[in-house]
Image (cartoon, rainbow, N blue to C red; front, side, top):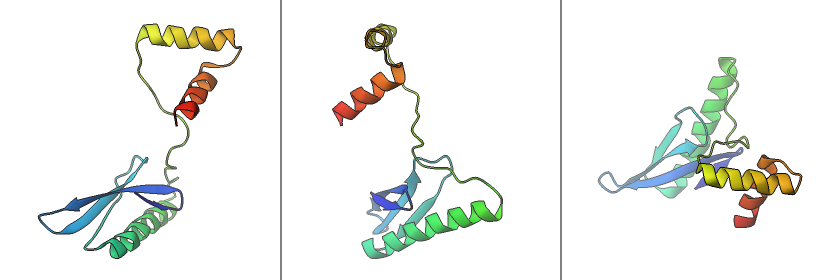
Length: 106
């Protein structure tokens, strides 16, 4: 995984073409990069991010910010009820309960 200016990029290897490729994760737009070696791949990733941010600026578009801190999770109704009751008993929000659980897990 690559990181630059708060953006993360996934990396894969194409054995048939003997090259690396990747995409920026955590944003809605498709931003990709590729190279024949690891050093050039990093530079390609940096250039892809810089190009994306420049495109957004030139077109007066707010660039996506990766991992803004909210996401949707689907769970069973029974688990939802249990977590909500747990939060209520502790006088904290459901969001805070989930955040604490995830922090503990990580």
